[in-house]
Length: 210
Image 1 (tube, rainbow, N blue to C red):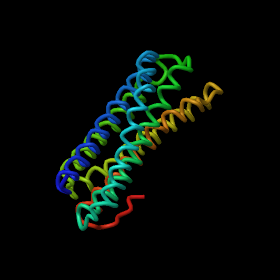
Image 2: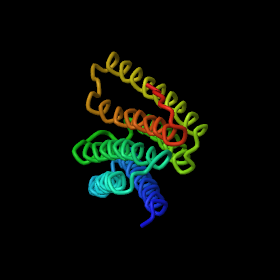
Image 3: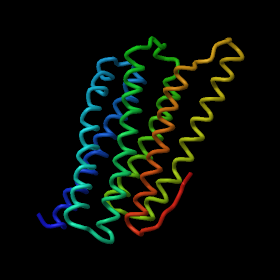
C-alpha cells in the first residue's frame, strides 16, 4: 500500500473514532438526564469499540512510522493522531463513568435536569466544532473550538455555586453527582487537547491551551 493510501485510511479511522466517542458522550448525557439505565448499559458496552479504535490507530501509526518513514505533514499526522486517539479514549472513559453512575445511583430524575442539559449541550456543541476542525485540519477552526471550552468551565462553575447554596440551605452536598458532572467538564479539557494536536499537524506549531 502506498503511503498516501495509508494516510487516508489513518485519517478515516481517527474520524470514525471521534464520531463514536461523540455518540457515546451524547448517549451518556441523555442517560444521566433521563436516568435511563438501559441506555447507560449500552454506553458502557460501547466502550470496548472505542478502546479497539485506540489500539488500532496506535498500531497503524507505529507500523507506518517503522516501515514507510513518513516526513513532514504525514509524520505529524501520525504522531498527533496517536495523541488525539488517547484524548478520545479518555473522553470515552468519561462516558463510561457516567453510564456506571446512572446504573448504580438512585438520584431524583428532576434534581439536576437543567444543569445536566446545559453542561451536556455545551460540551456536545464544542465537540462538534472540534470534530469539524479535525476533518479539515483547519487551524482557525481549532483555535475557535478551543476557546469555546471557557463556556463549559463557566457553566460548571455555576453548577458548583448552586450546589454550595443547596448545602447551606439543606445541609447536603451532592458529592458523587458533582464528580460525575466534572467528567463532562474534563471531557472538554481533552477536546481542547485535540485542538492543540490539530494545529501541530496542520502547521507544525506547538501550542498549549492550558
